[in-house]
Image (cartoon, rainbow, N blue to C red; front, side, top):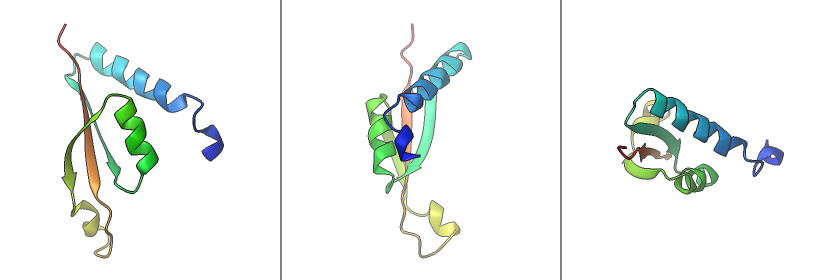
Length: 80
């Protein structure tokens, strides 16, 4: 999967999601990733998403030993 990074596929997927959300008159897009997925965090920031919150317990429900943190990202559309 690493060979597919930097080919623009993720950007095209995000652009398509933006278009779909705008056509549906949605106010924006929300997504979640883990704090240890640094590449994804950098990518979402580059796409214009901002961090809206953290959840330190969500993954503990799956495994009490899990130290991953959920990061919630938001992209709000400007009203036209």
